[in-house]
Image (tube, rainbow, N blue to C red; front, side):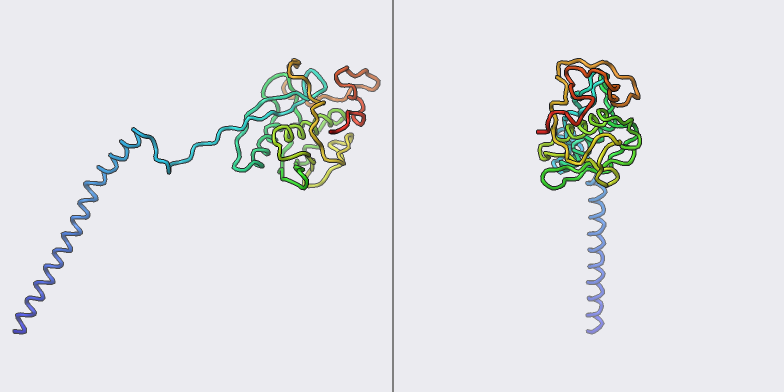
Length: 243
């Protein structure tokens, strides 16, 4: 009797092993035969309806900005429409606009706003709506100097920020992380800079082409009569009051 029970138990175990084996084989066959079919269905669906909503996000549209460069034909700043990459955060877009300003104008009629090789180290929000813009030492060391040239450089930076990004009302220029009293020795930067529309030429005024590698306009020779549209070129300290 005992031997009969053991025989039945062995047969039952053998049957369970066979059932398990067939289940495994059946699952493997399903993966082999139905996976390509499922993939084919998915490919057809993507071809007909495009990628699912959970696919790679679309690239952000570029930001439309106005850069301010010295005009090649007048001692004023001129508007230069441009596109820059839209950053994940607004401050990233600000930095992209300043990087584009440092690269220089992309069409004739403008002079560079900053000396070649100048780099933006960072731009970070400060107190009271002030943006702190930090340049490397080349911003000063490579600048040609001259009060009016420095004046246009400083306000090219300020106007580019304040015209496009309304979260800021003032700009303070730093060099190598330190507050600076001047760009290259002639213009005082003791106070933060505000938007200066009075330093921008009218949009209907044409500017002369600029030669590649040009630098911001130098100040006029001593005693020279300034043009009517820029009555304070020789003495920036007497420029119209900041708003």
